[in-house]
Length: 125
Image (cartoon, rainbow, N blue to C red; front, side, top):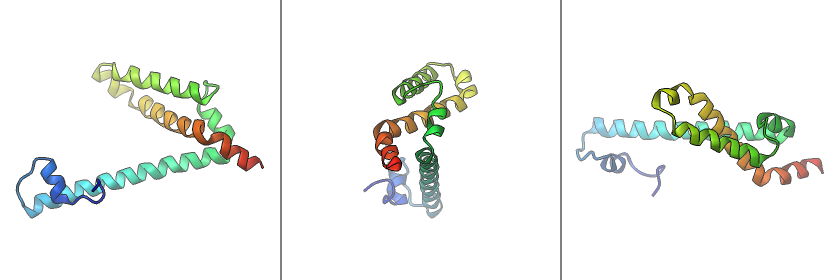
């Protein structure tokens, strides 16, 4: 059983709710479904970005600038993420966009580090 097949009552029990109020169980179900919708939307957004970069390799290399390679881009993104974790809360709140961009860059760079040469060689042939 995973997060997608789990029922609202089992999710409620795991969250510490022991009652069986229909309103509360419905609320847990709505929370679960909202989380699934958000995860799917994020997946499709990442997939859309990857498809754009697959079609045009120049866009990918412009996106990871000033890094020259995918490995450098991953290192830079990791540096931003780890630095972010050590910042005080008020600075973290001011730099959420920077964290989001670093995570996106790391995800895309990891994908292209693994599959990029194969994809672009296939397209060139």
